[in-house]
Amino acid sequence: QQGQGLVFGGGFFIGKGAETVNTTYRASSGIVPYSSVIPTGFFRGLGVKMRHKNWQLNMLASAKKEDASIQADTARQVTTFSTIRAHGYHRTINEIAGKAALPHQTIGATVAYSSPAQKFKIEYATALSNFQFARENLRRRYNQFEFEGNTNFIHSISAHGRYQNSIIFAELAQSQSGGKGLIGGMLLNITRSSAISMIYRKYDADFHSFYGRSFGEGTRNINEEGFYLGLKTNISRSLTYAAFVDQFYFPWLRYRVDAASTSGMEILQRISYKPSKTLLTFVQWRMKVREINDLSQPILYAISPENRQSIWWMGEKKFSESLTLRSRVLWSFYNFTDVQQKGAAIAQDLSYKTRRWKWDARLAIFNTDDFNTRLYLYEQDVLYAFSWPPYYGSGLRYYMLSRYKMSPQLSLWLRFAQTNYFDRNSIGSGNETTEGNKRSEIKLQAMYNF
Image 1 (cartoon, one colour):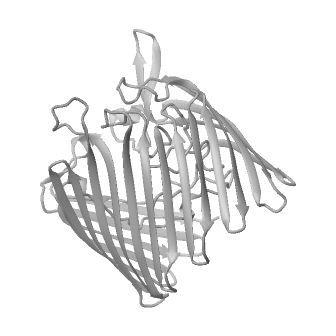
Image 2 (tube, rainbow, N blue to C red):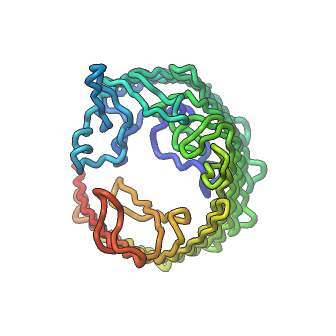
Image 3 (cartoon, rainbow, N blue to C red):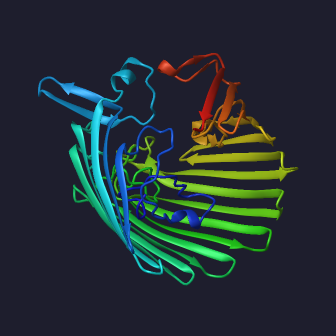
């Protein structure tokens, strides 16, 4: 993790959310262990850290094999790939054929200088990646600037400084294609109880960064420009208000958007009330508007604004050191041309722990008109795993997670989850079809510390 993540953006990064100020800035942490379950986005090889006075040098060499969709063109006698698979499953013939099918090598380095008082830091980062097979994209209007070929070289320069009660940061990067990525911003404590954050970013349509993960609207730093303003203020000792507004713009076409120069906006507001250490409640409203294809129009490549809104209430009460209850009520609203849909969900969580045991459980009831009004609720999971399933349709979902610390060295996890739908007799499609209206999941994990 280096700079603001345009070249090296590893590690956990929340991005836009209810923490509207502090999570928008990324601190450089250098080479760190990879502990996620996602089988992409990391390096496997050798990393070296060296420090001398105010200088620091990180170097890495990585060689691994990615899961990918490989195509052999017998007419041209070449082998290419189109996508790198991030799901990590090897269940079907095609998934097994793509397992570790794409050798991928990367070398990189970062060099940084910090001022004696650590109030200013400047960094340079570079990475060279090579695939054994060239990438060729399926020809679509929106992906004309996507990466193709075997090799990509990217480098950046970043800096951040601290002055009194503010942090100023920026990073500028360029990939082998000539595309540039730029992000800059500031965190400022305007009073003892209020803080704001401001971020501007601009990522060209031909900016290619395989390991970048900087702030933005999209999951990748490409084809985007935007300005973000966040605020957080403590109205009183127990009352907090947080909000952000993010205006973004897409210079080139995107998936399901066959028009250039489209735009959108996202707004969030949250009021939290915490009168004591054992009680917390908040109300949150969030809205996102962006333009997508409108197939109902007789005009070719017509676009219209898509409006999504959600309202979320949560209450948490800690009755003792062992027992915590948490309740949630959620609503969602979707509006696109003449389509208006809505959804709702109610969830009750329980957490109980003793010296050796820890139990987490949830019961949730949901009813939404369509997938467009789906609702997401984070679920507790086994160590290093995460679960964030969409709730859509009509049904009931529950899960239970238990952890037992058998000894100081040995810990065991067991998780069972099930969704019971009221509006269907089969779930999923293709190879992932489940006959009936119930889908269950069970996980067992053990960890031994040597």
